[in-house]
Image (tube, rainbow, N blue to C red):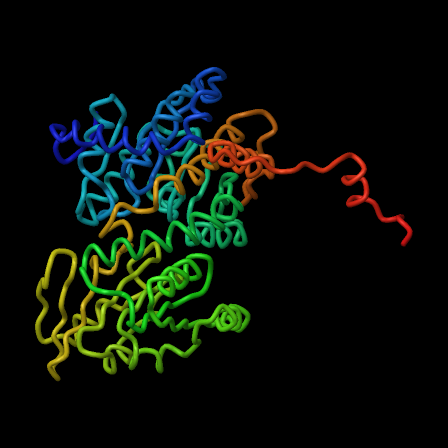
Length: 416
């Protein structure tokens, strides 16, 4: 039994899924392997990920490996109702709809956990939070899982540090084939796709303030510069700030950047990055967008307190009219702008990220998987396998070390 907005939307969702599948050769090859080997036979898998077409391809891949799958979203505004309907029509347990209220969203997460999963895929840590809290009883069969995001991995490590993590979890976000590509190229392109389709405004010539210069911030800044923007980076880490400067950007404190920026994009994973002191000095018409997992980076309660009027300026843009006549423009309610106002990362990027997810889940399902609670790295063999499959799909070949070269690199006794 599923809970979706309108099951009748399934034909549109199937079309989206089939389009995505055409551009996901890595996941396709893994799916064929899974179909032969059935690594998840007899296992139940619950997923909480942005529920759109690429995610549906991952769901299908796990099912090809024999898994019983239940899926829900990880953000109320990123679920695409036609994709949810398509998966439900195909017989999967789906609990999600676009615009779910907070109580509905939590209920959907809990319903997905109702299968009492052996394995989970989490995006932001909501499933883990429930399984360590109000839904603890639904984790009696849990063996472990994977976490997709920087934010979620931080929370897992905090739990592990405090001895509060019950199961082994793999930090998929830290895989080279995830953060080097998904966080940088995926976020970089999809954030600007969401902003541009929502605003229909020119990027060239604008001063774009990027808060945070991790892999996501690097990608957003790189694409902004490529579109002709003048980029300002705000950071708390001096090494990352120095890197931003050497990459050709300007580095400023947010207190200074707030007065000169035209577009503000938060990518930190922290709360209160842009707040009342910054709103007070921003330009009329400044655009505020968030690319972090949770809607806490822009202080929306402060924005509402300050505004004398709040109204929709166009779909996906809320205008907050200040007492002095300025209007600040918040995109996608401060939620992930690339998913709440767009289709998320490019398909070819998610092919790699979900390839890592799928192979990590097979690793957890097999012999030799970690049994002790903790946060574990993605096995190097998984990273290499995904990269090899991706290169093959691109028609690209690379060199291999000879035995002599490998011995030279691994040794220590060679003379000059």
